Length: 338
Image 1: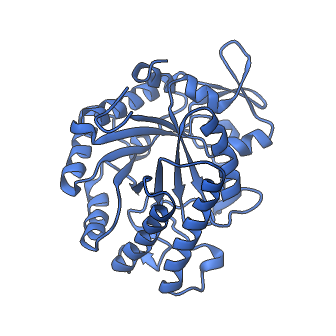
Image 2 (image 1 turned 30 degrees about the vertical axis):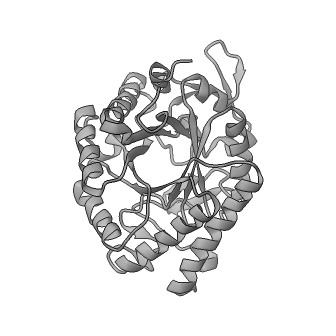
């Protein structure tokens, strides 16, 4: 399926796959035969895969986010992501990378400065972002992997690397940080599209303050990506409403848009499938190819296997270490037939 600019991205974030494989997890098809999880996503219609990159993640790839919440990170150092991205490239799929500029997950609640960078001043941190981004991407280029999209920051409504890059406390410096990442991407991969990633596409009051500040301070980006999680924000998924939000952002800021994260409850296969369909239909409805794609976060897991019991995967646990994808992501095949 094509848009006005290029084929529409129908993707999956698979940042946990390599760690799960090391832990002994396998995936099977409906007949019980072993399958490669990345190949399985392609067979369901996916044409792209998204990975995250941390600065110096813990070697055990787990993070105690809160006293009561332990998170599995996935193997998300640069080399591990290169190894995983080779598999994606070899299957003829596109690659998206997301730089978190942290040693673990960065999101609207937590944007920690990497431990090694904590004593740096603003100028040094700006240089760190540029150097980390550029050097990481040079390694991808040397490996023969050219990402199609790169996120500079992850769900950055409230800024990055707090307090140095806080939207509230340092709005101009925040944009300088982000522009350093943009410049590094373009220095290595000039044709790659840089994404500015917002959480809560449905929340204008959460996204607009960041975006107004970003563009007022000459922020550089090629498109705006959004997360869409009706489950977490307790509203009913609605393709018409989503199309309206995306249209508003596209018109207000003059940039193409994408859903870079969507998730729905793993136990509700039909509901998850419809949520994905809503995203695709809303993105496709934007005129002139200004809606660029949809990525599911993360389909290869079920809540039973994760320490924080994350409930928005798209797989079921059949036995101790055997997983099977639900039918949620098979909706991709309707839009991207074999």
